[in-house]
Length: 429
Image (cartoon, rainbow, N blue to C red):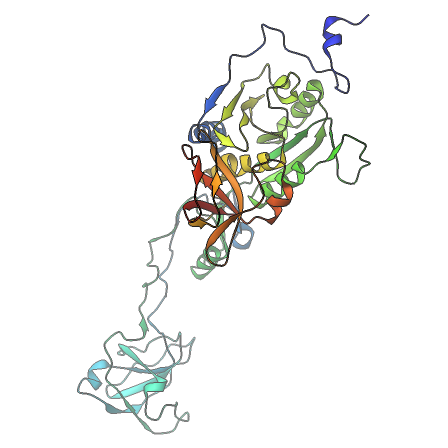
């Protein structure tokens, strides 16, 4: 005969342990978005203590967060050089108007030119070092004749009067030696790596990539490509979140799909704990009687709350055996919005990668409604005329609309409706 506990176990579950009256938690806290962000920051901050860094060649630093401040070891440009193809001159030689000067020795790029003799103009190429004594460059098209003379020919050129410093790039005018070139925490993209190379820097200190264990739960979920029987759905969360996390600079370990068994989930977490920095789960966080993530975390400091956001309200946050845990809802759009709102921005803040989402103001191409007590995040498309169109409805299962969208539309708490033409904040995704 089955015990009372066995009789309470619903069919199709892997024997989760139902809570007794004594185990039931107090009513859930309702949190604002900003308060939950602060709570997630507190949970993630230990990942920086002690700092885990590595020194890598510049090209291997692409997409990483800089873990040191770079002081320029040299001036950029390293010498005064010409901004144009033209003639290097002494401005005082032409101070009285157009004048004719003798053509001096040319100054090719990559060579140290001879000092400029008074009364002469030296042919010079873009980027070439300015000859000593020259203080201006006159573009070739302003010269008469508008061409360089044949090398070695004794000739003259007529030029207009220049202003001292015209078309000259002064030494250190971009970055001076000793200046801060890049601050600690900078995201290292192609532009930043280009600066490092120009400064002669070959290696940089970066934050090590954090490793996240990604866990999707649910008896109803099957891996794409597996035989799908009635009542089952193909898993999208693993792919959706792994792609997002890898794009954000994380190393992702997929635990696969964990059935609704607290014992199985706990064993998976314990097995991976020594090798990971963070756990992200999807599903099993709502208020049902048999939510596997809630059941697994009964003996661990993980709080479950409801955040004032739609979609993505149910959230879990804490640690399992000392490893930070973020428990996201199971619907695909909900888990992605949770990542975008609560994890991705803080990764950039703590580790310098990824870069923040570009945020703009745009006008709605249609009216919308929103629950006034929640921060609603809708999916949308930015149109060529600069307005934004809603894509799909409010549902957290609408993957087709999510795939077609290119912006997230934010409607803050306190707003219940907006008319066509009103402004909203959008994030480009």
